[in-house]
Length: 511
View 1 (cartoon, rainbow, N blue to C red):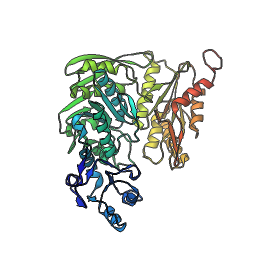
View 2 (cartoon, rainbow, N blue to C red):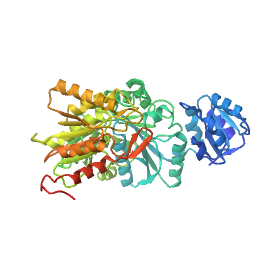
View 3 (cartoon, rainbow, N blue to C red):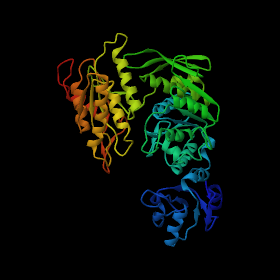
View 4 (tube, rainbow, N blue to C red):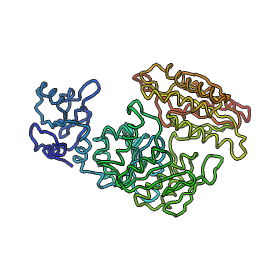
């Protein structure tokens, strides 16, 4: 697909300097990755304006703001330029035009919220595939087309890359696209130009307050999927927290409500009816008054809520529920309550939980698995940290959530980035110590800077019937220290530690 600069300037509401008949076939933010016939979107940056890089791009034209135009003028730029007030605000619409408005040919289901986006998206993908659809997935763990990986970097890619991905999916015969929609993407306009058939809301709890000044601002960012230009055509909301109840009231499209709370007045209700020793759950789901049964392979009430939300979103998109649920029964989500089994006689789990509410939820789930009906379960140990250059306020709250539930809390490093990791650990420990004092619980607290050594200590501590969990990184395979990303996979490290230490049941060293 191509569009003329005149047409793009009109869509952008911008001023065109130069030849408007030029045909544009692609758009992007990376000056080095663009070829002849492309439009370079030169955005203001935190340190340098993107227009400074225009001289080095092969792009045929430039989209920028007034400051960018001044830089280009001083550099004696001769290529055509479209000037707008705010490049990000119109970039999605421009990209959608260049790539032929691909989401008009797709059924796009967007999932937002603090926790559960990735799991809900995987549940949707599995159910839609089982229902006979061709499915694209865009999210935290990457992009896939019918489960084949496609390289991308962000949870929700920048608008040009996102529209390019949609266009590729159309070419490859995709019918349905499931995507995680982050608050950053909504606030920065990355999904402008995207037509959402269904929008889903999981929940809201403290996170990203380094980017959003307050919880109200965070909520407002999430609400962009449901209110205003570009809002989803249909809405499905879990109303088990106050934020969900508010979102259901705000949404401008028809709303389907979802709940796992007993007695809640919701359109879709779900509850656990039984649990296996593995944590797999027997679930009952009522959709539009019709009862369905589901064997959910994922543990925890929060995953019952995720499954109910996914089912509601699929139903809102016109998918037959029974066929959808058959696919859900085979789902596996990388790094989400993922069990690592090397023959040990205790439970070992890795999870992505890196927010206070998520930490509490996964530890509560482990406790339910351990205690069973007789309440005679073993101990729980957790390795936990907090990321650098991110929301400082949640660090002690995460430590508190761990100390209120676990018997051993080992505080370690988790992507310290540019920060000194010691004060980060200190903040997590501060919250843990305060919670320990307030609760009067017997909790052992340790600080181990090396994440690998922390995992070793956790595995050494465990004994028959216990459960241990490493939280924070889940599917991630890198530890960000300064400007470097070092290979580190919690799943690999837990497996290594398990195979290093003595088998508790046989007394023999495992090879």
